[in-house]
Amino acid sequence: MFKKRFALLITIIIAFVIGAVIIVYQSSNSINRSFKCGDSVTFTYKGSVVTYGTVKNPTTNECWMDRNLGASRVATAFNDSEAYGDLFQWGRLDDGHQDRNSETTTTLSSTDDPGHSNFICPMNNPCDWRDPQNDNLWQGEAGINNPCPEGWRVPTDAEWDTEQASWSFQNYNGAFDSPLKLTVAGNRPWGDASLIEVGSEGNYWSSTVSGTDGTIAAFLYFDSSNATWYMHPRANGFSVRCIKD
Image (cartoon, rainbow, N blue to C red; front, side, top):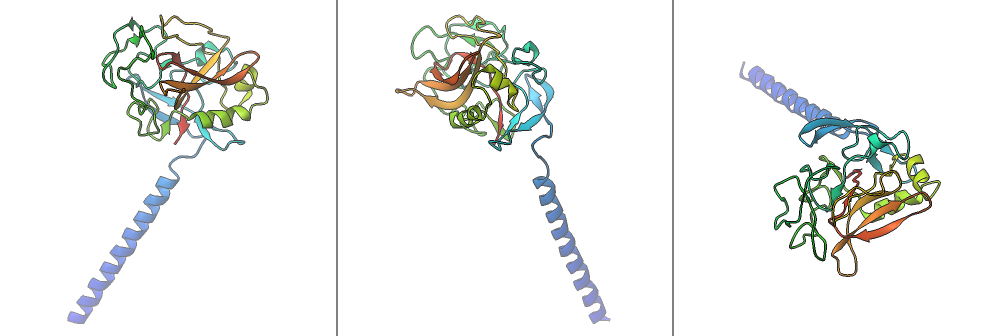
């Protein structure tokens, strides 16, 4: 009788172990299959739940969100105003300052989170909204103020450079014809935060701190005849497009 009970106990233990292994395997496979480029991504942005699509550039093999942060839809033209989205100051989080008509202030922030939704207009060099500057605000998914959802981040200048090189035309037509459907959303300059070049220029932040003194940041620029790289003060308001980490 003892042997039979012992054998039954061993059988139950073995069955339990096998079942646990199967569950772990299935869970692992489920995680691995949880996202593929082309799926939708649902997240909270400016306090509301939004759903964006994702697209892969077959040339670069990178996966991107299908619209700018704050855009209401995928662009139907290079100057589709509903696809312009918001304009972020470099390194700031999703706090409302990126609204195209947000209020302004000249008071700089001494912390990574200003605690308000005003667009900060600095009066002196290095023309950053934060004093002292912090180079690590948008560095990767774990960046302190990463405005993209979990698993996504602001692209580096090298990633933007590779993306730009895949365009059929080096201008806003090529930017729109690409899988990303980029738009000419204009920008808000640090001086007075007025909207300028809307419908004629695209300006997209990278996460890369740049400049000879390291006080500014790199961004992708394109218009009707050109696509290139520039470096500008971090207080400027430019578009953000998230890339999969």
